[in-house]
Length: 257
Image (cartoon, rainbow, N blue to C red; front, side, top):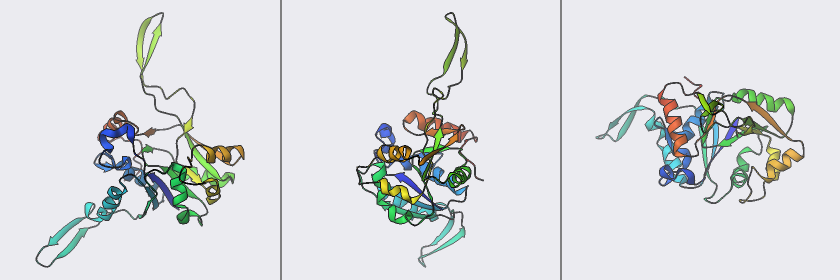
């Protein structure tokens, strides 16, 4: 099964990190968040990736061009101009990097890679800037069970601020950050049939607007409800939060050995 990952946006709200690299290449624990997302899918047996590049896409291409060297122990014999690999630790991934344009919208990027997924029974589709402990295998099974064209993962947004427990003006305690207001949002991690590609017009198509709205109106959009961990990396504050979770050794999205 293939997974399409959006990795071409500007990441303007994370400009401290994205001036020199695309947002999906911003690192968490020394690895790009794109790597974390791919590891999430790989833990569920999805190892064939289509990466929609755009802004500074060459950074992503260079990363994967050198990935084998980064992940392996090697000896370089300079006299003989040879390289000997001692231990191979690279993942069993097939990664296709497609330039989908600097200015393309989310739906436009998906349309640009249509040739790579049009003959699939179904495929995964997600954003390159968020992690979760969502059960991807279960979402795929759910998609196959209902027979509709599209499934999105409905997630609870993370709380931004702690809450006060008060009574008659007196603060009694502090509560952990509540998850939003109880309403679920589009958390990405889609499972789609290739038939959804017909809803994509051109580079200006925003996947979250007309295509999803049309699918919903036609009764072809289902929600896989996920009440666990879900965290986008929209701001520097989000990045620091993810870094802290990773450093703790208890990152909720890490479901691989």
